[in-house]
Amino acid sequence: MDVLDIGEVSERSGVPASTLRYYDEIGLISSIGRHGLRRQFGPDVLMQLALIALGKSAGFSLDEIGGMFGRTGAPELPRPVLRDRADALDAQIKSLAALRDMMRHVAECPAPTHLECPKFQRLLRIAVRRRAA
Image (cartoon, rainbow, N blue to C red):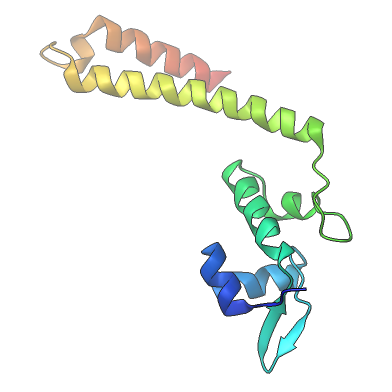
């Protein structure tokens, strides 16, 4: 079994050693021992760190991510939760695309002022309705 020093894990994963120590303390990853004062990890920690990064990118909290690892550290990904998060991301993407389009229009609008632009006014009304919903 390959043993990885905390410095090597940090270098290979791009995760700072301080974050690795924190993840170890809260149980997201587990060190398998120490060499002097330096924590040692098994090679599976790199996959776990990749899953943690993916979960964070998807908007999951560290507590939620921790619940997706079994007792052995192997992922136990709850498909319904992942589907719900994917649906939420779709909604966020749609909202961000609309915001992007509005900002592009504002940047390129030929009207003397943005408040005189009918398209801008319509986009503002849509934004207000979405906020109220």
